[in-house]
Image (cartoon, rainbow over all chains, first blue to last red):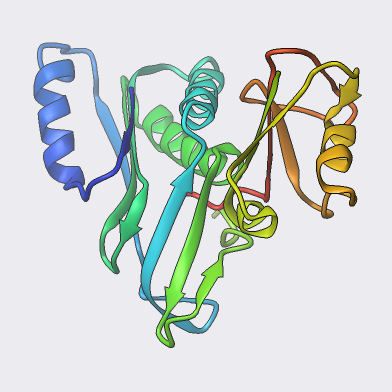
Length: 149
Length: 75
């Protein structure tokens, strides 16, 4: 399931609610993988006081759903929940949550990471940061992703 | 009629979020940009057709929705 949220959200409350309504009663899951991304107060050595996240309504949901379907086709997953903020965010505000339920840990770990990496490179969202000097600046690229262990 | 959308920094560049274009001519996504802005699409920009990623050479027909935007930075 995908939620694009225009207001601040508490990922742990959303997770608890989703768990109650969609997962409880399914006794075959043995792993839950959760990633939460929050807004930093710095980027590329600049202080950042605020961020404006925009998206392409319709295409964002469509592409996110495609990402989830493509990845879950390759892994043994019971359910995936993605929540992503748009609008004005302040430091420490949650930006994104990806939660994955699966029988075994490997699928929960791998799918949550893969969905996040693809979200950052394929889902049409754009960040504009307001720096400490009040200058507005479009973020041109995301930070590098997973490098392996 | 073709709906043309702009997002993020490209929306700032063109100064609007949307254009409409008569679909009388058979144009590619790249040619639509040229027709509307009289300049090449800035390098590195992405394009979509009916909310799917597309190529600059893809043809556009009446009723389609085309969008131009910079690389995405969500998550």
